[in-house]
Amino acid sequence: QVQLVESGGGLVQPGGSLRLSCTASGRGFRIMSMGWYRQAPGKERELVAIVSELGAITYAASVKGRATVSRDNAKNTVYLQMNSLKPEDTAVYYCYANAWSDSRRDFWGQGTQVTVSS
Image 1 (cartoon, rainbow, N blue to C red):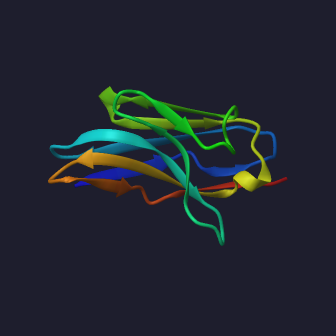
Image 2 (cartoon, one colour):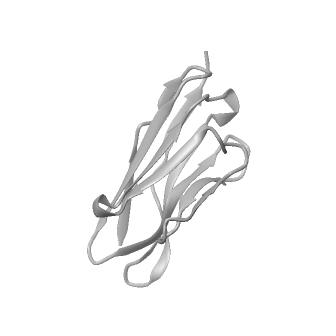
């Protein structure tokens, strides 16, 4: 099993910035891709940004130019820096990892609330 624990959410004013962190833990696992999804009220969960095992990065069009995702493989940690936040960025942000544990599958964090409001 792989456990993902997020931190860094909260209330941010429009135009502000935040940094989310997510660390994976467990026994005998190997992370392939790792990144972030989000889900706003009444909407489906959507990709924000993801880093492949080889370091390839994909961003959602809605955050491109405002978000930077990075990964520290030695620490099994992924970060998301978001700038110029907008009210429409308000959502629960979920850490995601595709990893080999007993088998290769998807793992999710518990989610962290990000609210962009004045």
